[in-house]
Each structure stands twice: as C-alpha cells, then as structure tokens.
Image (cartoon, rainbow, N blue to C red):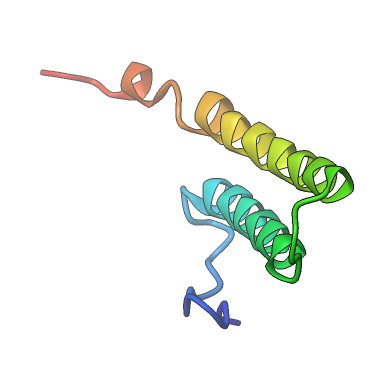
Length: 81
C-alpha cells in the first residue's frame, strides 16, 4: 500500500529502519491533520491554536523519540579497523 500523497511504499517489517519509518509516518499524519485543522480557518482563534498546539506537541514528542531511541548507539555497534 502506498501513501497517496508521497507515493511511499509500505515497507518490510524486517527492514532495519522499519520502526523509524513507522514513527516518521505517524508524525507526518499528525502534521497533515494540523494542516487540515487550520486550512479552513478564516481567522485564528484561541481554541484552534490550542488544538494545533496539542497536535504539534505530539509530533515533537514522536520526533524526539525517534532521535533519542531509534537513531542513537549505532556508532557504538560499529567496529573500526
């Protein structure tokens, strides 16, 4: 199954970056929901700002999780000659 907007194919769960891909895809979906939320708004409101802030905070948390948990420690595993 491909992402309709980015034509990104579904990945193999055995792929080394599968969990990173999945987390980034979740973040992308949340960002899109934030864009959709504000797209129809003629004027900014406190309520809309609060909803957008909540969406974006979850995106930031997801990205921090990827950076901290998924993309660290590889150098420790590599052997250099």
